Image (cartoon, rainbow, N blue to C red; front, side, top):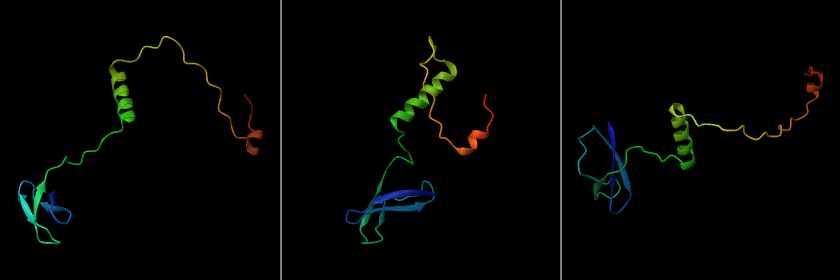
Length: 93
């Protein structure tokens, strides 16, 4: 079964379920009874955010063509560790 969209000229958009390939070109609106024509739309597609798409392409590309590194990245300062009373009993390195 597939969901088909129809647009009523007076009320709203309507979604109707028919077996695949058997949807008529028009149906009657359940609210006002007007003839609603079939709409064509993209099937369940979503747009990926640009930043995420770029990261995915980079990860995919690095599987076969790893990036060449010429130097080490700059060293970052260690993150501040919250002090907890139980950490005083831990062995020190």
